[in-house]
Image (cartoon, rainbow, N blue to C red; front, top):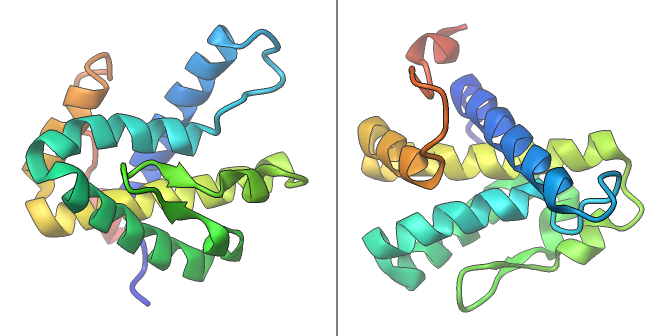
Amino acid sequence: MAAISPASRSLARRLLAIELSRARKSSASPAEVPVPPAARVCDKLRAVLITFAGVAGFRSLLTRALTLAAARAPELKGVTANPDASLAGLDGVIGGKKKAAAQEWEEVLVAQLLDLLVMFVGEGLMHQMVRQAWPDLPVGPLRSKTEDKS
């Protein structure tokens, strides 16, 4: 099992924090976020990537990311990709999990998806896709290769 790159983990944490903040702002009760940040991140990436690779292409990528992530976060074993490439089965993961544990599986899933994107389309195109999904991200490198060397 290949390690998830530190750079992808770092970017995953940033994207999850952005989506958690947005979910809290739009929620009736900021303490309870109805949709996990990982699902929100995957949905935003799905919107961008289906124009590039189609629904089947993104579903394939997400399914592979789920398989790899489940090896690190066993609570993801019941999560699958729907035919429309959205996530299914998250209710079982969220129920009863501590906040820190939930953040770990979310980070693992998103980082794995980002690593796969880098592997299949390259660093530059992955950056363009992330910037398309989050145009308000601060300017600067999204993922530093020096992070991977540490």
